[in-house]
Length: 208
Image (cartoon, rainbow, N blue to C red; front, top):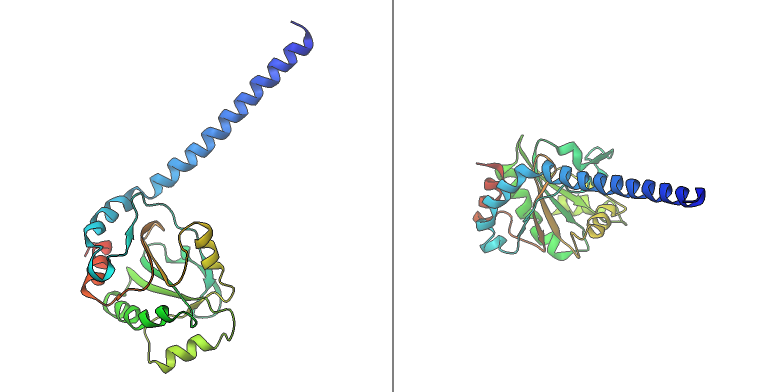
């Protein structure tokens, strides 16, 4: 074998080793993701039979996976993200004043928060209006909707990120996330979140 042939064989072996290392890395990442949400699988199984009635359209995660760490502004106007809610179950809801179904479900979301909200659960409604930024707060005040902390993303990046992750197609959208940041369920479209069906679903997620 010539020196050139030996060099080619050596480079080929190195390439195979590199490819194997890359494959092992991504395989490990996948296992890590599944492992991180292994506890969520049992919770999701409890939710499955409760996706009925007013929340029949809820899609319970067959294999829970981490939700993107969505970034938005908190009630104080400062940047925050979904990771700030680790340790609590959250119902993330995206809404806008130009979305009539969104507006229709806001009173029910506020009632859900008043009924079940506490140290272990919060309804996190994120407004994604990109113009007339005072309008959402004015609308909430006019309708007498209180009890919901005001979260906003005036660039609507949260919607785009969920859309890129193939989680959403339109508005409104609600995402139930467990304390470890794993997706339990998703609903595209409005729901009566104050209904007995909805509260039973959330209570099951909380283990109550």
